Image (cartoon, rainbow, N blue to C red; front, side, top):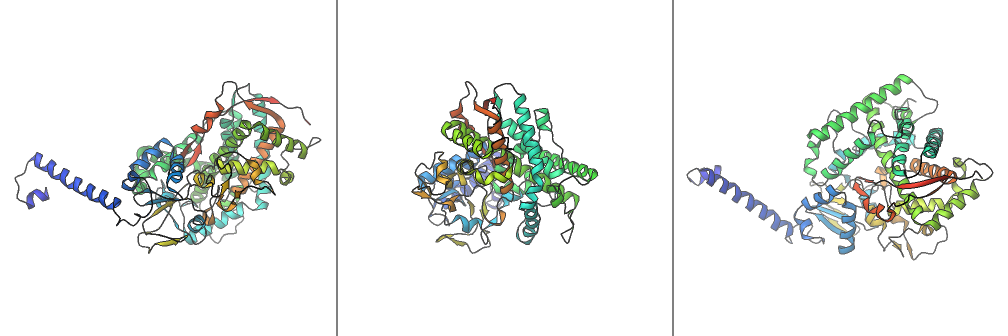
Length: 501
């Protein structure tokens, strides 16, 4: 309208449409030309033309849950540095990744604020700087060796219940479902002193897992269009999920407070600072938000790792037999397979866990990018200048399968590479980061590994496990989707009781 008036053209609807079309076409063309030109700050980094022009391609890939595979294909084609968006890079250079994620690295991007309403207290996920350091101090206290020992009775209780409930089932059991129920029940115990009984009911009655995966999927997709982040919670569907989570978490927190102290110092004990060690006691809302973060962060990820580990072992019978033989050697004469004091002797099982996390990291695309602010001067990373305004991914799935760091057989399940004295041509543990790196790495990684060791030990000591009849085991990993956390399709198995040794 302003252009028509400026040029003193008679007004008509057709002229107005033509003016708008001309303006937006010219603007779009100029943006495309600039993004493809040698004058763009990221022009020297290789990548497909469509990715250099727009993030819409990446959005389409994310909607289908194949971002991790897209990253892998791009790195196989273009090398360790790939331009995956107009102002975005994916980097799998082992020398660069610590400089991005470690202490003194890059700031968290807007991705980490996804979906947090202004009324919701910030959590360890979104906080930065001194605020993150203070919150991390509380979480670190909750994950010390002494704290983990306090949690062991809760893990034993739920792992024993898992074995009991699996023993009640008749053939063709979906292990993914039961691992999901186990991790949700356990994290409910740890974070709020109870609240979930999925193992008892044989289903997720409150649809907590489904809501978690819906929220994470929305966050993952929105991460492809970061300008939408501050308003994501305004979308009715996402807003409803966030509100339900807030109310659900606060309801669990109120119940935990009404019940009073539990028999063990659970995770809530630390998050709510019941010991009074912090200068300022956290509010109920803050502790509830942290409890929900614990459930989101530790349930799906651990269930994903458990599912993938079982799939790898069942797909490789020789490794399955070696794990079972090791367990039978370590736990003899009626020893309790949930006894964590013998975990150090489970060398081969630990190697299998590491190999599973290498090939199927629970957060295959990194779980959230880092960024260089526009008002920054840019950063030199591993000898390369990264300009301001750049968003950077460091996808573990691609990094872990890079033959520059794991060779031979970078894409195959070969747990022996993790054994002491193994003589593989390339085995760079510095390129292994299933729990990320630096001050924002996964604070619960020791808890996760303890859970996995305990669950697999008691399962393989209790049952002979095999793929269910007519189950397409080879296709299972092709149905893994990347919505922040890797989601899995049903893993169908048959179980038969083993005789107690």
